[in-house]
Image 1: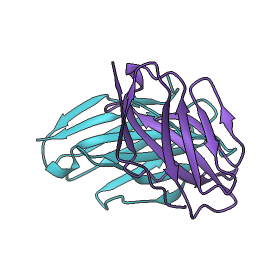
Image 2: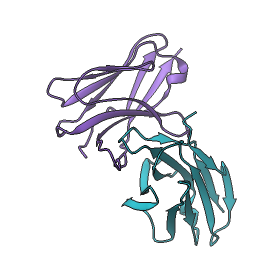
Image 3: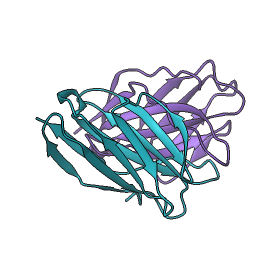
Image 4: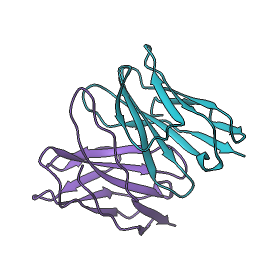
Length: 112
Length: 113
């Protein structure tokens, strides 16, 4: 168990809809990272937050947004969903000392 | 971050050592070598990391060449549960706000009974 919790585990929704994925980092970790993994694709970095502030952006679409709250949990919001957004979405966290990232078990999003 | 090169796939017999190579010839002096693995559709799992010295933990050993241009991850006694995609990643690790990991294609390790 990595200590990173992601909810929900599975999500099925229709095109055009909006969903919110939630991540609780390991206790004490200040950084949260979001990754997307489409079917048979590699892990693509989306965005990083550190102690509530956006720190780095990767290949994140404008339809997607994220935030990190004062209690350090994070949410990834996906809107105007398309079939191609179907993927596994992983959250990871790390502490302030540059430790390795630890990943949750992901949310599997299916857009129909 | 420096780019890494790994073989796309490897097989290993159960109970034998699995040696997974990684080339990172453009690594900088402040970049660490990290190894992660991903068992089918699960979240990537951290295995080990190192800067220039060899490292060992309960999961694996990491051997880094003296010039730091390549490394080998060793799973001493592979089991069927070690079948996974293994990622070698080079990354600067700075306190305060560690940078994200950039995943390549990795090596699909299949442990055979």
